[in-house]
Amino acid sequence: MSAATAAVEPAASSGPMSANTRAGAVIQYYISSQVDTLNRAIAATERHAPGSAGGARRDPPSAHGDPRLRAPVHRDPARGPQLEQLLTALKHTEDLERLRTHFADRFDQLGLTVAEYPKWYGALDEEVRESYRQIERVHSQTWVAALLGQVRMFAEHAKFTRDGDKPASSLMGVVSKAKIHLLDTYVKMSHATDLVAARDEMRTAARDAHHLAEAAAPGLGRSAEEVIAPVADLGHLLVQYRQAVIARNWLLRLPGADRADRLTASLADLEKEHLHQLGEQIDQATAAMIDRWQ
Image 1 (tube, rainbow, N blue to C red):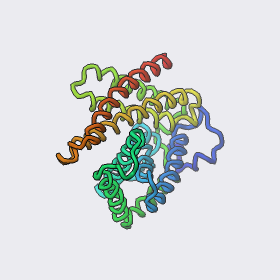
Image 2: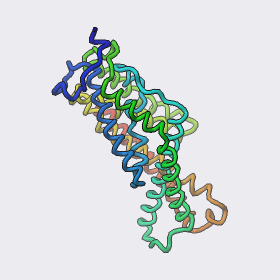
Image 3: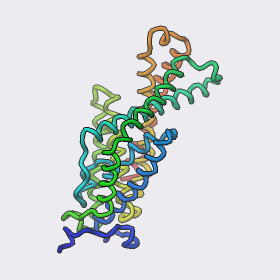
């Protein structure tokens, strides 16, 4: 039986990785570590632990759904409508939870006591709790346990494709393409009619580049690590930008009486100012990243 089709041992048992390690082994190791992270996140979600919904959603075992990263291995567990339902529920909870934390930080900046918080914040708090209950109703179904079993089998008994037999050094081409795509999304922003949508596309590109470099790092070493740090910093700013957009839109969609409240109006203005500041910081971080890569 050829190496391209034989089941492989877990990459962790193959010793230190290098640029000569098979690409499939490097990616299999990454996926296996993601499965462990996913299991911990699911356990935390069952306890309604703060931030756990986001952890469960962001750590899928198929290398964040990027087909370029899955290429060295195959038999990836299929996504279906039930899984999409669960991911949607997790995403909704993550957004609500981040929004609650975001506004709590704003209240602290303004020196407000809990008694001075606006009434709509209490409603947001209850919405977060209900969203966790909704997740519980979904992931308590038997198909979730069956899917996780398939994921574990995939991680432990993945098979190499033809690309999997290439050396890990071949993954640098994938990382380089992700870098180029990220920079292209930034260049296109100068012509964008919707700057918010353009920056969100850039956020997605930064996230993909970060995860691709992170997965390849055990085999590529410093070459991948030099991508991870600047892209992670840029991605953090883009996430903050998205959060400020969500927060401002939330405030602007409140019922008229709430929206007319002086505190709420001040918060909306604060978010608008923050968006401008973040836009400048994103430009600066991108310029620094380009200089570092030249």
